[in-house]
Image (cartoon, rainbow over all chains, first blue to last red; front, side):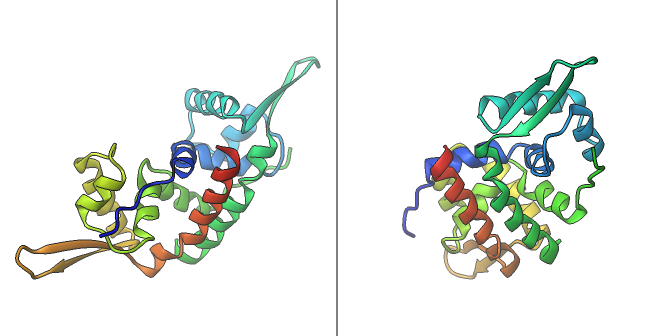
Length: 102
Length: 102
């Protein structure tokens, strides 16, 4: 059996994408910037605490940016960065597979 | 803000792929059938208990088959089904993104 080693880049990507809810959050943001409450509407089973945690991780990873609009009341939106938007092709492949096999 | 609903197929696929280690296990099996110990060599941080659990889920989902060869000693290998192999394009997209962004 050939010894096959995991690519560290691939492992790092799965460390990120493999976290529960992350994929669905990214998928939702591919349609455009969303408010916190919008994501909760789209993913009802996702708690506010978990969404806060996932947004913090995604911001840290440079995949999401948090935009604050100084309106009254203040409007806060979450948006994908270029790095985040480039996950679209991954999501499209998952969608194709999902439609055929789930 | 348009109300955008998650596709149930997509959600089901992420429910599966979004589990920790699952993606790395599938990625390892794309190189061909592997024994339990081979996967543990490839993914050192993955415990035997967790690997057993993931294999059971993947078998139940029809993504992996467990093949028993009546040799001495008995040889057991895990192999992707067609449904599993068709995840290759998803893995390739993740690899491309990972090489650019991680």
